[in-house]
Length: 379
Ligand SMILES: [Zn+2]
Image 1 (cartoon, helix red, strand yellow):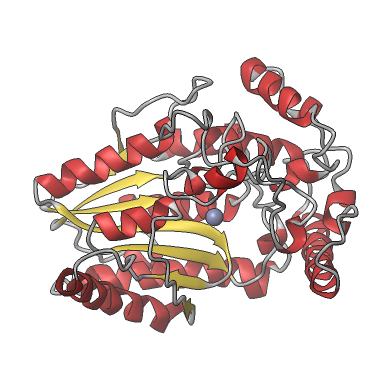
Image 2 (cartoon, rainbow, N blue to C red; image 1 turned 120 degrees about the vertical axis):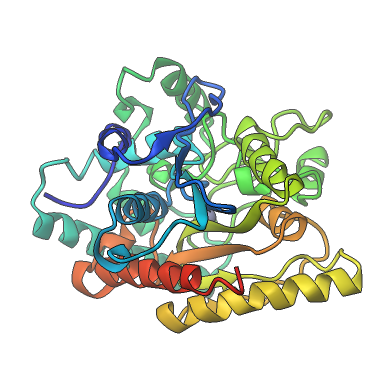
Protein backbone atom coordinates (compact mmCIF):
# COMPACT_ATOMS: atom_id res chain seq x y z
CA UNK A 1 0.00 0.00 0.00
CA UNK A 2 0.99 3.61 -0.52
CA UNK A 3 1.17 6.34 2.14
CA UNK A 4 -1.44 8.75 0.75
CA UNK A 5 -4.11 9.47 3.34
CA UNK A 6 -7.75 10.45 3.02
CA UNK A 7 -10.44 11.38 5.52
CA UNK A 8 -11.69 7.82 6.12
CA UNK A 9 -8.15 6.51 6.52
CA UNK A 10 -7.23 9.10 9.14
CA UNK A 11 -10.40 8.36 11.08
CA UNK A 12 -9.52 4.64 11.04
CA UNK A 13 -6.02 5.47 12.23
CA UNK A 14 -7.34 7.68 15.02
CA UNK A 15 -9.71 4.96 16.21
CA UNK A 16 -6.83 2.54 16.40
CA UNK A 17 -4.79 4.82 18.67
CA UNK A 18 -6.19 3.31 21.83
CA UNK A 19 -3.97 4.98 24.41
CA UNK A 20 -5.07 8.48 23.49
CA UNK A 21 -8.07 10.23 25.01
CA UNK A 22 -10.48 11.83 22.57
CA UNK A 23 -11.26 15.29 23.85
CA UNK A 24 -14.15 17.68 23.43
CA UNK A 25 -13.81 19.67 20.26
CA UNK A 26 -15.91 21.79 17.89
CA UNK A 27 -17.54 21.15 14.54
CA UNK A 28 -16.71 23.08 11.41
CA UNK A 29 -19.29 24.94 9.35
CA UNK A 30 -20.23 21.78 7.45
CA UNK A 31 -20.30 19.60 10.54
CA UNK A 32 -16.85 18.00 10.68
CA UNK A 33 -15.44 17.62 14.16
CA UNK A 34 -11.89 18.88 14.46
CA UNK A 35 -10.11 15.82 15.90
CA UNK A 36 -8.54 16.64 19.25
CA UNK A 37 -6.73 14.02 21.33
CA UNK A 38 -4.82 14.08 24.59
CA UNK A 39 -2.09 11.88 25.95
CA UNK A 40 -0.61 12.02 29.45
CA UNK A 41 -1.38 14.10 32.52
CA UNK A 42 1.86 15.88 33.34
CA UNK A 43 2.14 19.56 34.20
CA UNK A 44 3.84 20.67 30.98
CA UNK A 45 1.37 20.99 28.15
CA UNK A 46 2.57 20.69 24.57
CA UNK A 47 0.31 21.30 21.57
CA UNK A 48 0.87 19.78 18.11
CA UNK A 49 -1.17 20.97 15.15
CA UNK A 50 -1.27 19.63 11.58
CA UNK A 51 -3.46 20.13 8.54
CA UNK A 52 -4.22 23.86 8.78
CA UNK A 53 -3.91 23.98 5.02
CA UNK A 54 -6.04 21.34 3.31
CA UNK A 55 -3.43 20.40 0.73
CA UNK A 56 -0.60 19.91 3.23
CA UNK A 57 -1.33 16.26 3.82
CA UNK A 58 2.17 15.41 5.01
CA UNK A 59 1.59 17.56 8.10
CA UNK A 60 -1.44 15.42 8.99
CA UNK A 61 0.58 12.30 8.26
CA UNK A 62 3.39 13.50 10.53
CA UNK A 63 1.17 14.39 13.50
CA UNK A 64 -0.53 10.98 13.23
CA UNK A 65 2.89 9.32 13.29
CA UNK A 66 3.86 11.38 16.31
CA UNK A 67 0.64 10.42 18.11
CA UNK A 68 1.30 6.76 17.41
CA UNK A 69 4.94 6.79 18.48
CA UNK A 70 4.39 8.78 21.69
CA UNK A 71 1.25 6.96 22.85
CA UNK A 72 2.52 3.49 21.97
CA UNK A 73 6.13 4.15 22.98
CA UNK A 74 7.43 3.12 19.59
CA UNK A 75 10.87 3.50 17.96
CA UNK A 76 12.50 6.76 19.02
CA UNK A 77 9.98 7.11 21.89
CA UNK A 78 10.58 3.56 23.18
CA UNK A 79 12.15 4.53 26.50
CA UNK A 80 10.60 7.99 26.66
CA UNK A 81 9.48 9.11 30.10
CA UNK A 82 6.38 11.19 29.36
CA UNK A 83 5.26 11.67 32.97
CA UNK A 84 6.06 15.42 32.93
CA UNK A 85 3.90 16.06 29.92
CA UNK A 86 0.37 16.40 28.68
CA UNK A 87 0.26 16.27 24.89
CA UNK A 88 -2.53 17.87 22.89
CA UNK A 89 -2.85 16.67 19.31
CA UNK A 90 -4.88 18.34 16.57
CA UNK A 91 -3.86 16.33 13.52
CA UNK A 92 -6.36 17.91 11.10
CA UNK A 93 -7.07 21.52 11.97
CA UNK A 94 -8.96 22.03 8.68
CA UNK A 95 -10.92 18.83 7.96
CA UNK A 96 -12.94 20.40 5.13
CA UNK A 97 -9.87 21.46 3.15
CA UNK A 98 -8.30 18.07 3.78
CA UNK A 99 -11.36 16.27 2.36
CA UNK A 100 -11.35 18.49 -0.75
CA UNK A 101 -7.66 18.12 -1.51
CA UNK A 102 -7.50 14.40 -0.82
CA UNK A 103 -10.62 13.78 -2.94
CA UNK A 104 -8.75 15.43 -5.81
CA UNK A 105 -5.76 13.15 -5.21
CA UNK A 106 -8.00 10.07 -5.33
CA UNK A 107 -8.83 10.80 -8.99
CA UNK A 108 -5.32 9.58 -9.80
CA UNK A 109 -4.10 7.62 -6.78
CA UNK A 110 -6.33 4.94 -5.32
CA UNK A 111 -5.97 3.60 -1.80
CA UNK A 112 -4.68 0.27 -3.02
CA UNK A 113 -2.27 1.58 -5.67
CA UNK A 114 1.12 -0.07 -5.15
CA UNK A 115 3.70 2.14 -3.49
CA UNK A 116 6.08 2.26 -6.47
CA UNK A 117 3.35 3.32 -8.89
CA UNK A 118 2.14 5.99 -6.48
CA UNK A 119 5.68 7.25 -5.95
CA UNK A 120 6.08 7.69 -9.71
CA UNK A 121 2.95 9.83 -9.98
CA UNK A 122 4.02 11.92 -6.99
CA UNK A 123 7.48 12.41 -8.49
CA UNK A 124 5.96 13.48 -11.80
CA UNK A 125 3.80 15.99 -9.92
CA UNK A 126 6.80 17.28 -7.96
CA UNK A 127 8.75 17.84 -11.19
CA UNK A 128 5.83 19.58 -12.91
CA UNK A 129 5.35 21.83 -9.91
CA UNK A 130 9.02 22.71 -10.10
CA UNK A 131 8.78 23.54 -13.81
CA UNK A 132 5.74 25.69 -13.06
CA UNK A 133 7.81 27.69 -10.56
CA UNK A 134 10.62 28.15 -13.08
CA UNK A 135 8.16 29.27 -15.77
CA UNK A 136 6.57 31.80 -13.44
CA UNK A 137 9.98 33.15 -12.57
CA UNK A 138 10.55 33.81 -16.25
CA UNK A 139 7.15 35.41 -16.76
CA UNK A 140 5.28 36.52 -13.67
CA UNK A 141 2.17 37.46 -15.65
CA UNK A 142 1.76 34.14 -17.40
CA UNK A 143 -1.68 33.03 -16.21
CA UNK A 144 -1.91 29.96 -18.42
CA UNK A 145 -2.80 26.55 -17.05
CA UNK A 146 0.04 25.08 -14.99
CA UNK A 147 1.60 21.68 -15.67
CA UNK A 148 0.67 20.37 -12.20
CA UNK A 149 -2.93 21.53 -12.76
CA UNK A 150 -3.09 19.76 -16.13
CA UNK A 151 -2.24 16.53 -14.32
CA UNK A 152 -5.37 16.93 -12.18
CA UNK A 153 -7.69 18.55 -14.70
CA UNK A 154 -10.28 15.82 -14.08
CA UNK A 155 -10.42 16.59 -10.38
CA UNK A 156 -13.62 18.64 -10.18
CA UNK A 157 -16.08 19.01 -7.30
CA UNK A 158 -17.65 15.77 -8.54
CA UNK A 159 -14.78 13.73 -7.13
CA UNK A 160 -15.84 14.63 -3.57
CA UNK A 161 -17.73 11.57 -2.26
CA UNK A 162 -21.50 11.95 -1.84
CA UNK A 163 -21.20 11.31 1.89
CA UNK A 164 -20.16 14.99 2.09
CA UNK A 165 -23.22 16.65 0.48
CA UNK A 166 -22.98 20.13 2.03
CA UNK A 167 -19.26 20.42 1.51
CA UNK A 168 -19.59 19.11 -2.04
CA UNK A 169 -22.26 21.67 -2.79
CA UNK A 170 -20.12 24.49 -1.47
CA UNK A 171 -17.11 23.38 -3.54
CA UNK A 172 -19.36 23.11 -6.61
CA UNK A 173 -20.44 26.68 -5.98
CA UNK A 174 -16.85 27.91 -5.49
CA UNK A 175 -15.63 26.30 -8.72
CA UNK A 176 -18.61 27.54 -10.71
CA UNK A 177 -16.56 30.74 -10.90
CA UNK A 178 -14.81 30.31 -14.24
CA UNK A 179 -11.92 32.46 -13.06
CA UNK A 180 -10.61 29.45 -11.15
CA UNK A 181 -8.44 27.30 -13.45
CA UNK A 182 -9.37 23.64 -13.98
CA UNK A 183 -7.23 21.29 -11.93
CA UNK A 184 -6.62 23.85 -9.19
CA UNK A 185 -8.64 21.84 -6.69
CA UNK A 186 -5.56 19.66 -6.16
CA UNK A 187 -3.85 22.40 -4.14
CA UNK A 188 -6.92 23.30 -2.08
CA UNK A 189 -5.62 25.06 1.07
CA UNK A 190 -8.74 26.80 2.28
CA UNK A 191 -11.72 25.55 4.31
CA UNK A 192 -15.07 24.51 2.84
CA UNK A 193 -16.20 28.03 1.94
CA UNK A 194 -12.84 29.08 0.51
CA UNK A 195 -11.36 30.93 3.49
CA UNK A 196 -7.64 30.46 4.09
CA UNK A 197 -7.22 29.94 7.83
CA UNK A 198 -3.74 31.38 7.99
CA UNK A 199 -4.90 34.58 6.24
CA UNK A 200 -7.89 34.79 8.57
CA UNK A 201 -6.66 37.77 10.61
CA UNK A 202 -7.98 41.30 10.66
CA UNK A 203 -4.57 42.63 9.56
CA UNK A 204 -4.22 40.51 6.43
CA UNK A 205 -3.61 42.77 3.42
CA UNK A 206 -6.08 40.71 1.38
CA UNK A 207 -8.95 42.46 3.15
CA UNK A 208 -7.95 45.77 1.58
CA UNK A 209 -7.59 44.13 -1.84
CA UNK A 210 -11.10 42.73 -1.63
CA UNK A 211 -12.58 45.98 -0.29
CA UNK A 212 -11.01 47.85 -3.19
CA UNK A 213 -12.22 45.20 -5.63
CA UNK A 214 -8.70 44.45 -6.76
CA UNK A 215 -8.04 41.15 -8.51
CA UNK A 216 -4.92 39.74 -6.93
CA UNK A 217 -3.28 36.51 -7.94
CA UNK A 218 -1.35 34.19 -5.67
CA UNK A 219 2.40 33.83 -6.18
CA UNK A 220 4.70 31.27 -7.77
CA UNK A 221 3.08 28.21 -9.36
CA UNK A 222 -0.29 29.48 -8.17
CA UNK A 223 -0.12 32.74 -10.10
CA UNK A 224 -3.20 31.88 -12.17
CA UNK A 225 -5.38 31.56 -9.04
CA UNK A 226 -6.99 34.66 -7.56
CA UNK A 227 -6.64 35.02 -3.81
CA UNK A 228 -9.35 37.66 -3.70
CA UNK A 229 -12.19 35.23 -4.41
CA UNK A 230 -13.14 32.10 -2.41
CA UNK A 231 -11.09 29.24 -3.80
CA UNK A 232 -8.13 26.90 -3.35
CA UNK A 233 -5.79 29.67 -2.16
CA UNK A 234 -8.57 31.37 -0.28
CA UNK A 235 -9.66 34.72 1.08
CA UNK A 236 -9.10 36.05 4.63
CA UNK A 237 -12.74 36.14 5.73
CA UNK A 238 -16.32 35.56 4.75
CA UNK A 239 -17.90 38.96 5.21
CA UNK A 240 -15.60 41.81 4.34
CA UNK A 241 -17.68 44.41 6.23
CA UNK A 242 -17.88 42.36 9.36
CA UNK A 243 -14.63 40.50 9.97
CA UNK A 244 -14.98 37.21 11.77
CA UNK A 245 -12.50 34.58 12.84
CA UNK A 246 -13.27 31.13 11.55
CA UNK A 247 -14.38 28.42 13.98
CA UNK A 248 -11.16 26.42 13.30
CA UNK A 249 -9.02 29.38 14.41
CA UNK A 250 -11.21 30.26 17.39
CA UNK A 251 -10.94 26.67 18.58
CA UNK A 252 -7.13 26.67 18.40
CA UNK A 253 -6.81 30.12 19.94
CA UNK A 254 -9.08 29.22 22.87
CA UNK A 255 -7.20 26.00 23.52
CA UNK A 256 -3.86 27.81 23.66
CA UNK A 257 -5.25 30.76 25.59
CA UNK A 258 -6.86 28.58 28.26
CA UNK A 259 -3.63 26.64 28.77
CA UNK A 260 -1.63 29.87 28.84
CA UNK A 261 -3.93 31.55 31.37
CA UNK A 262 -3.55 28.59 33.68
CA UNK A 263 0.18 28.79 33.15
CA UNK A 264 0.26 25.29 31.72
CA UNK A 265 1.32 25.94 28.13
CA UNK A 266 4.92 24.89 27.53
CA UNK A 267 5.23 24.82 23.80
CA UNK A 268 3.26 24.66 20.56
CA UNK A 269 4.29 23.28 17.18
CA UNK A 270 2.31 24.22 14.08
CA UNK A 271 3.15 21.83 11.24
CA UNK A 272 2.81 22.79 7.58
CA UNK A 273 3.60 20.95 4.36
CA UNK A 274 6.70 21.86 2.46
CA UNK A 275 9.85 23.96 2.55
CA UNK A 276 12.06 22.46 5.26
CA UNK A 277 11.81 25.66 7.30
CA UNK A 278 11.44 26.84 10.88
CA UNK A 279 9.54 30.03 11.72
CA UNK A 280 10.40 30.79 15.31
CA UNK A 281 10.34 34.58 15.52
CA UNK A 282 7.40 36.35 17.06
CA UNK A 283 6.12 39.47 15.29
CA UNK A 284 7.91 42.63 16.42
CA UNK A 285 4.86 44.32 17.82
CA UNK A 286 5.67 43.30 21.37
CA UNK A 287 7.56 45.64 23.61
CA UNK A 288 11.27 45.23 23.06
CA UNK A 289 12.01 43.40 26.29
CA UNK A 290 9.20 40.91 25.86
CA UNK A 291 10.14 40.38 22.22
CA UNK A 292 13.75 39.60 23.09
CA UNK A 293 12.74 37.20 25.83
CA UNK A 294 10.38 35.30 23.54
CA UNK A 295 12.91 35.29 20.74
CA UNK A 296 15.57 33.81 23.00
CA UNK A 297 13.28 31.07 24.31
CA UNK A 298 12.05 30.19 20.83
CA UNK A 299 15.56 30.23 19.41
CA UNK A 300 16.72 27.54 21.85
CA UNK A 301 13.99 25.19 20.66
CA UNK A 302 14.50 26.10 17.01
CA UNK A 303 18.22 25.40 17.31
CA UNK A 304 17.62 21.82 18.50
CA UNK A 305 15.00 21.38 15.82
CA UNK A 306 17.49 22.50 13.20
CA UNK A 307 20.17 20.14 14.49
CA UNK A 308 18.09 17.08 13.63
CA UNK A 309 16.30 18.31 10.51
CA UNK A 310 18.76 20.71 8.90
CA UNK A 311 15.84 23.08 8.26
CA UNK A 312 16.37 26.74 7.39
CA UNK A 313 15.53 29.50 9.87
CA UNK A 314 13.05 31.89 8.35
CA UNK A 315 13.69 35.52 9.00
CA UNK A 316 10.16 36.83 9.10
CA UNK A 317 10.11 40.56 9.61
CA UNK A 318 6.38 41.20 9.63
CA UNK A 319 5.37 44.06 11.84
CA UNK A 320 1.69 43.20 11.79
CA UNK A 321 -0.23 39.98 12.12
CA UNK A 322 -0.55 39.21 8.43
CA UNK A 323 -0.93 35.54 9.25
CA UNK A 324 -2.78 33.70 11.97
CA UNK A 325 0.33 31.70 12.87
CA UNK A 326 2.26 34.97 13.25
CA UNK A 327 -0.39 36.08 15.69
CA UNK A 328 -0.13 32.81 17.64
CA UNK A 329 3.70 32.98 17.68
CA UNK A 330 3.41 36.41 19.23
CA UNK A 331 0.51 35.82 21.59
CA UNK A 332 1.89 32.63 23.10
CA UNK A 333 5.29 31.57 24.25
CA UNK A 334 7.37 28.93 22.50
CA UNK A 335 5.14 28.64 19.47
CA UNK A 336 6.94 27.59 16.30
CA UNK A 337 5.84 26.85 12.76
CA UNK A 338 7.58 24.01 10.97
CA UNK A 339 7.43 23.56 7.19
CA UNK A 340 8.08 19.83 6.83
CA UNK A 341 9.11 18.35 3.49
CA UNK A 342 12.19 19.63 1.67
CA UNK A 343 10.65 18.27 -1.50
CA UNK A 344 7.94 20.71 -2.57
CA UNK A 345 4.66 20.23 -4.37
CA UNK A 346 1.67 20.03 -2.06
CA UNK A 347 -0.18 17.79 -1.65
CA UNK A 348 1.66 14.79 -3.14
CA UNK A 349 5.17 16.07 -4.04
CA UNK A 350 6.61 15.04 -0.64
CA UNK A 351 5.71 11.41 -1.49
CA UNK A 352 7.68 11.53 -4.74
CA UNK A 353 10.80 10.00 -3.20
CA UNK A 354 9.95 7.69 -0.33
CA UNK A 355 13.49 6.70 0.58
CA UNK A 356 15.20 10.07 0.34
CA UNK A 357 12.42 12.45 1.26
CA UNK A 358 9.29 10.98 2.85
CA UNK A 359 10.93 8.58 5.33
CA UNK A 360 13.63 11.05 6.50
CA UNK A 361 11.05 13.85 6.79
CA UNK A 362 8.91 11.80 9.16
CA UNK A 363 11.78 10.25 11.12
CA UNK A 364 13.98 13.36 11.47
CA UNK A 365 11.08 15.40 12.77
CA UNK A 366 10.20 12.67 15.28
CA UNK A 367 13.82 12.69 16.43
CA UNK A 368 13.82 16.49 16.70
CA UNK A 369 10.67 16.45 18.87
CA UNK A 370 12.05 13.69 21.07
CA UNK A 371 15.28 15.62 21.64
CA UNK A 372 13.43 18.81 22.48
CA UNK A 373 11.20 16.96 24.96
CA UNK A 374 14.31 15.54 26.62
CA UNK A 375 15.66 19.05 27.30
CA UNK A 376 13.34 19.79 30.16
CA UNK A 377 15.15 22.97 31.14
CA UNK A 378 14.23 24.78 27.93
CA UNK A 379 10.69 23.58 27.50
ZN1 LIG B 1 0.74 25.83 5.11
